[in-house]
Image (cartoon, rainbow, N blue to C red; front, side, top):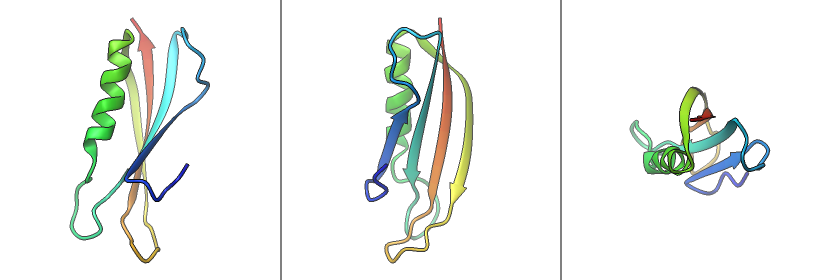
Length: 84
C-alpha cells in the first residue's frame, strides 16, 4: 500500500462471486486536530459493495501514529461484507 495517498483500500482475494468479501481501507487523519479528512473513501467502498449485493457484516479498526515529517495518524478499517 502507498501510505502517501490520502486513503487506500485493498481486497483480500479479489475473487468475484464469493459469499463473503474482506476489504481494508486505510484512512489518513488530519495533521492538526482530530477527525478523518477522507471518510468519503470509506463510504465509497461500502456503497460499491452494496451495489454488488453485499451488506456490511463486521467492521474493525486499528490506529497507528505516524512519526513522519508530514505526520497524520492512520486508521485501518477491516470490513467483512456478506452476500445477500
